Length: 89
Image 1 (cartoon, rainbow, N blue to C red):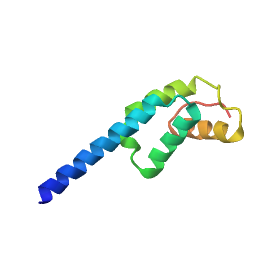
Image 2 (cartoon, rainbow, N blue to C red):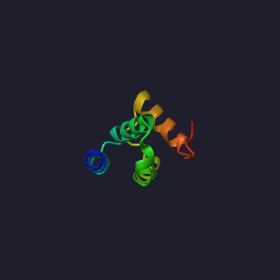
Image 3 (cartoon, rainbow, N blue to C red):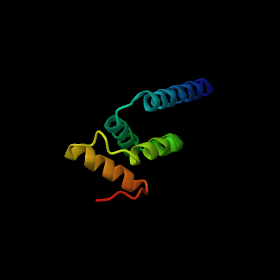
Image 4 (cartoon, helix red, strand yellow):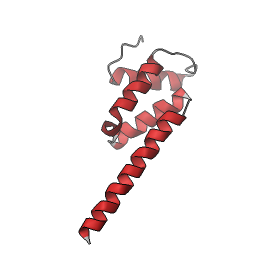
């Protein structure tokens, strides 16, 4: 019985991981991507998506388009700085 429950849990984790990866690839709005990254970090599961997050942040770090308001600019600044990007204040 325990092995079946463990297998169901592993299957569910894999399914959720694929859903998050699909969200990361299908979302084009940069603020939404930063919010997703922020949520993953706050939930403590960002380590499952390190390579995807790095790829997204590489693209976001080179663009300033779409960050006109204070919320989006500060979110971009904080997330990029937390990940070691050199962002001008």
